[in-house]
Length: 101
Image 1 (cartoon, helix red, strand yellow):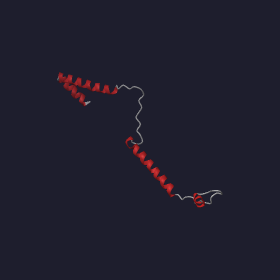
Image 2 (cartoon, one colour):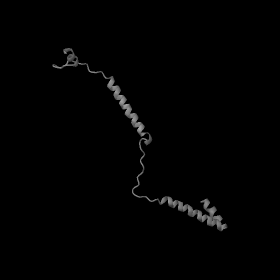
Image 3 (spheres, helix red, strand yellow):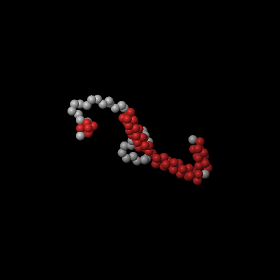
Image 4 (tube, one colour):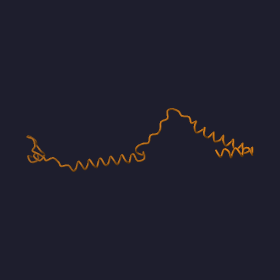
C-alpha cells in the first residue's frame, strides 16, 4: 500500500512518471493474466510419483532376482538327500546289468 502512495505522489508531480507507472501496472497485469489463462485440453490429472525412482528400478529388480536365485541354490544344496531304501522287486540297476554281462 505504501508503494502505491509513493507512485501516486510522484505521478502527480511528474506526468512522465505517471505514464511509466501506468505502463508498469499494465505489464504486471498482463503477466498475471497470461499465467492464469493457460488452455487445458482434456482432463488434467496430477502426476503420480513412482514408488521407486525409474533410474534405479532395473538395478533393484536385478538385485532381488539374483538374491532369490542364491537363496534357492543354498536351500537346494544344504538339504539332506533322502536315504536310499531297498529297490522294488524286478528293478535292475546299472551296476547289476554290468555285473551280469
